Length: 235
Image (tube, rainbow, N blue to C red; front, side):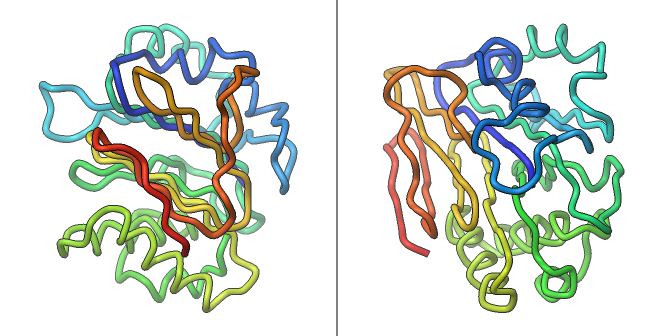
């Protein structure tokens, strides 16, 4: 399994998701509080954010534990955006440990992370190509293909998860995606939380801190957050 987190709202730094909170993504990489499968997320990490000067998001990812990257703390202090996504990885046995298998995956304006697992043959049924031979990359490619076909981001996630879940009853399919103006996530097999504030919304595998206001998203639900609010939809 993995841990991931996204922010949508008033611009803030990546450090506010990774290093600054008491249970930020750095802490979750080696001591997650609520992770159901696996204990350490040391098989890579990635971050992505949006800059007005670019049509596509900026992405930085590596196939090493997040705590070993000496460059990340300074980068995270200056990378600032109104839409951010970051993830740490615990690779499923048999899956490659390489940058191309590490979230966030991207295509055009979209970023996507997968927390979970699905049978590789099921994932490969969903798309014709992927950048890595891992289940998460195939799921991402399937979502992106549907998005390019005109499906809204939330619908694309829901379609892929419903298909994969029907084919593989043991699948765990917590997907988290964003496009710079919205966040969409599925909850299917692991925890997921939201924190709604006056300046935006945090979406994360587990709370980043002990502040009141964190709410668990029910199992087998899709959640979509944008400037228009937050909506939930059963999967």
